[in-house]
Image (cartoon, rainbow, N blue to C red; front, side):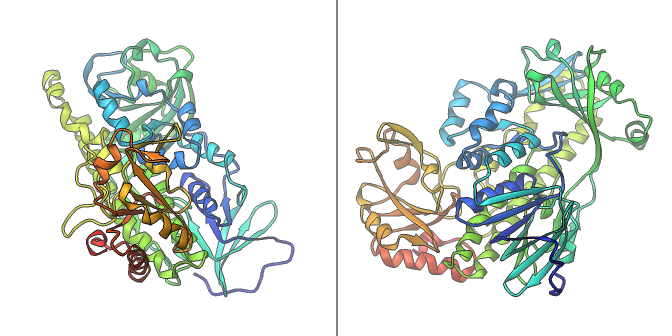
Length: 561
């Protein structure tokens, strides 16, 4: 970060906030929502005057949908997204109008759908990034503000935090305690604060064509999230964006040096490429936008500046291939992890060192997602380059399931893996557990006739979840009122409880509480610790001490409580 400089001219508009977020994409907007929900005044600076019309990320996995549910926008996201029947399979064909080679059902049956519905209060959805951004801006809380059409150009130190100077129609200066850089892959500020980029070897160059056309003659009855085309002229993927409106994305990788010329030169006929992928001419075909980009993974050597006042999130901290759809999801989940820690520090409930746990927890998850996305990309590239006989192609298609069916990766990552354990145990299958570091499992409960999820119980702070023999935790929560400066509540959940009833027994099964034991859940929905309930007040103090003194959730918290 550059040294403190004289104050800017008096003509600049001046704003004060607790946190200034640079970048108004999904990560930056989600950060503003999560921070504002915890009482943190936030200003977001975004260079674009409006969300991009080009649909980049489209997959919103189950975990991210849970976070959007926290924010109250999940129903709207599903409404403007792709209907579930259009997303439950992946199809491979010579061309869209040609021969079908194979299909993979991500949701194989009604029983499969029911299993998914049992592990989360929401299902994943396909909804383009620009639509998600628009909804997040529309629903922004009162103590968060987005300013568009301004370019953040300078980030400097102040005695109490940071100052961001931005250009636009009128100069703008924002002073805040902390800055979150969600400026994307090409943002200019990271290097100025000493956050240096790293990059793996690129995996290739791709062309994206966003277009509209009525493809229902070839998609009706075999609706799919993706149609991989293996034609003689074009090999790539047709991505479902909004089939009701005929909105699609054609993504084509350059598989040979010759294709670099075919796809990326100025004279390329994008309409012909689309028709080659479809396999026939289409009336009313219209191209909206075109983008070409290099696919690969990037990162930072550190996600936090040396003085601790600036933290990076989302694509500013990491990028990886889109194969798997984890880019936007990982960024929004970064923001969720970071927000409660910033709130705890800003409210005086935790020391600044708590923020070190953000990178320690999120970097391994991002790196796992990057490795898996890279593996997917290489596998699909090899498949697109192959000339496999149709019967053999169909027989082997199941090996591609982890690319498209990844509930274990989306919901099962942990912030406290055991020695030598990966952060994700199984990519495809999610196995609920209430161990420390894991997402606190979902279970439906009855509250005065209304159905709620266990994931609804910690939206504004920490929660203690306990069984019929753990009523003492309600007294403890009332006495303490807060934990690390954030609200603390306790919920007694039992089959015949007066308020929260475990009518199906799902909560008892998955949380496996013994006697007065309680599970302490963080504001980001991950388990902080399992507390035996023998000396509850002391156990709660010890959990707080371990968290603030170590700067991270200890892997063995539940055993040592």
